[in-house]
Length: 372
Length: 92
Length: 173
Image (cartoon, rainbow over the protein chains, first blue to last red):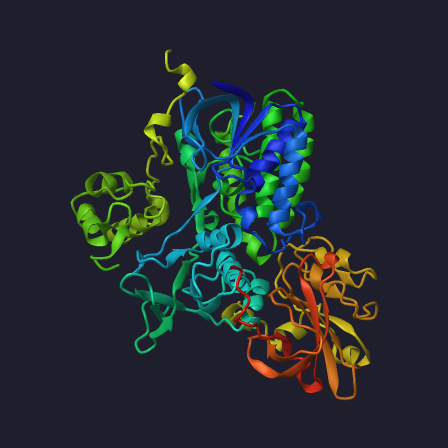
């Protein structure tokens, strides 16, 4: 058995930031991730990030991950890569298996009085005839293949979904040498940032709003897809269907919080469509309904890397407060700085709906999430 | 979603089988899972959960927020059974 | 609110001209100037600190659209590789009697070389005209966003925003 003050699950921007803040305040922190490299989704983000200086704006995601990892090690965080946490048990013990990716898998039980869940999100699926054929995959999976594994999964791509993931992965597939035949979007408007859409438009990629994929063609692997215009009730408009040749169909249909460990920990759940679905209820200090259990990043509502980073900082501060490493006044002051930056990230036409949704969660969580 | 369309890839469960389960009385993800095995495979519903929710909503006239998430059971990720637990505590 | 940008994925000239980052035609005629094509309020401000002359203002909140002070701007192009959205260009309408010089960010390999004749494209990726590559800047400070400058006929200065991507010979494997 291994004991720490704080166990952090998930080494993406939220988990790294939480670990750094807790370790800098004197907590003994264990950070675990199922991947070999820390950074979560940052490791495959080869584009420059938005935000402000505090969020390392203008820096590529992968470089932000490298910087956060260095800060975590300097702060004294113990990092366990290749560690799959499979359960949270009564009393707060964590069951984990190390070495799933390399070496001999071996079990370990971790005990920590404080738990920070930064488990991220899952990609949503879309099913249509042919969706189980080789050549159909999540956009996030394709991004891992090109940017982490350096394997090009296809040369002619149909992207389904025009949120930021769909737009960014389309761009990066072209950088990796593929052609993107089209991006189809069921809604009548482009989902992601206009600047991301403009980048791929300049490269000649048509973004087809009010369009959907009807089926994938192919026997043993995909050879193309049938797409069509759809009306307001999502019904295909007769006479608009056409074939697109493709050897890769990427699904970018949004993300939802990956909250299974939070549910095992007994966290009360709440639903928010603006934040991706069911998520552990939490307050402004990232406390859940279970004393000593905190959330940060996409697991508490799908947003962006920069917001995940700030939520991680807040969770790390709150954990330190609970462990008596800092007083309540200091904790409140430190959190306020991060909260102000969070609010500035939740403005504008894209941020405002998330701001409103988060405020509703905080309000609901204020009474349900006990303070230390 | 046509009846023959696969919804759960891991367990090869079709939309028709899930619709039948709902018409037979399944009202949530767990009930669909128990009747059809949808969500019981390697990925534990990580892929098909949102698709099953869509079918439940359509068949029962619900909104996505009305369908509670499936209760997870450890192990929530695929790990070898032999590695579960703590070797140091095996004798206790 | 539907717009060309949200319907097709790229902004129309009208959308751009009504944004605070797009320089007036009269200013562009006088000499090199930055062209900021950022028309959605997203939380982002690296362009503000990128400009050594303080010609770009975002302010607080950081979702403000970047405003270009075209009198302070010299069109040096330092801001081009600093914009995470690759949405800043530089235009020199005084390059020659008949040609304008357009600088834009470019992140596809292989990079073009000075002297190459390449296909200039518009915001929707449509071929507009042939163009001549004048300069390619790939300095370490650009952090792997190259800035390419091409010469184009002046009449296309408002339309051209890049060059056709080469789809052969740029595989990662």
